[in-house]
Image (cartoon, rainbow, N blue to C red; front, side, top):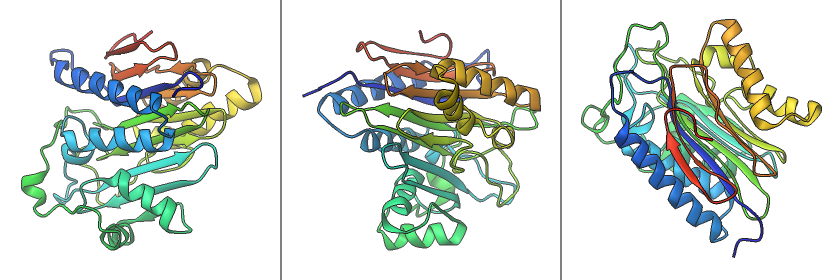
Length: 291
């Protein structure tokens, strides 16, 4: 039974095309918000919920993450992911990982099965194999890129989820295929704790957009610091961080949920695919205003 209000936000990436319908993605994210609501109301931990929701986003093929990722310039699929438990600040991440269905499952294995926070490349692959994670047998037939380069310097895509559970615990998870036509070995903000992903006892955060700029802005860490030290709301803090990203030349979006259930989902890109489970039980989904 729920002992206090729960809340959750998930995103399917910032940046939308004006002439494209996103009804499929919005319906999918709304269904995941319903699933997350049920899990949280049944007592699931925030950590389990964000991992489960991001996994579903990865395997859907609808977003530039997991199955929907695009290859780099060597025609190889290198994926990144991170997960963080706000109660303990334990975190796990993988970067430039190849050959496995779910980077977010691998990130949690890093957190729970190693003394490390991040494993990259071959090391991440070897851990996933050792832990028995499901492999991609034929990358060319498995991956179905959800987006194509659109002429921007950084055509991007990411998925993420943040949640507050019935015990007041917070968690965040983020996964991405990275920028389209990226240089081999490129790592964005997604797996960098404090840049694209963060959770503590006050807030959980997942970022999406042009990762290089989110790294330089320390976006997720900035949101957390402003909430802790300036006592801003998640929305106020996230909007300030996005202004800094824009000042540096980037765009994107940030989702966050605070320990009191207040949520944030601002963006300064052309849009952000998103769904929200509000603390009052409402679910909203779309690419525009989610209030």
